[in-house]
Image (cartoon, rainbow, N blue to C red; front, side, top):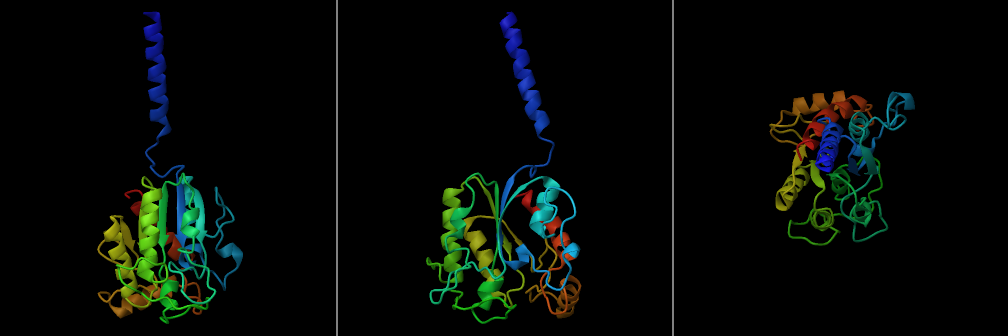
Length: 261
């Protein structure tokens, strides 16, 4: 009988300890692979470092971009797979290698909890649609949703998504539908991919759930409103990347979205 009560007490202590370890913050302590281009890594050319660095916390000294801002306030482990000029697709010709589909997607940590993919701007630049000063050698066509090779935008998404879902079946995978792509075909492609693979998305071009961000491509929005957003959210007149306030702004609703995926 004494042994029974002893085991009962131990069981109660075990359950109590585990209940107390969860404080209601589903993101706390989780590992998040943040995958993207300069809209994720941050391009603050024209500013002093003190103007765009996180001042305190786990990620003090890092750029104040949405990933590190969210990670900082939720004690998350960030696997940073972002870089300026990065594409989703890998051009068939030329020596361009800064592409997520060029094997980088296979380097996501095995114990990752969250994976977000935010690409498209530079793929559109490699198709001759706009430019931000990055390297754009090697043509990348949009392709079709049936493509299965990494040298088209659709095809690279298909290759990457199929791999991620097979190798990270219990990771929370989501697509951040990219703003700044110049034409609607790219965000439309990403929404189609999200639906094809049954993963959630958040559209930074603006919809009924999410505010339009800088350089939104959305024919439903008044061009004057897009211009106002662009002027408020750019780093400088010449640097049309999201500024610190824009990253802080989008961090709020990206974090809310993360909690639900």
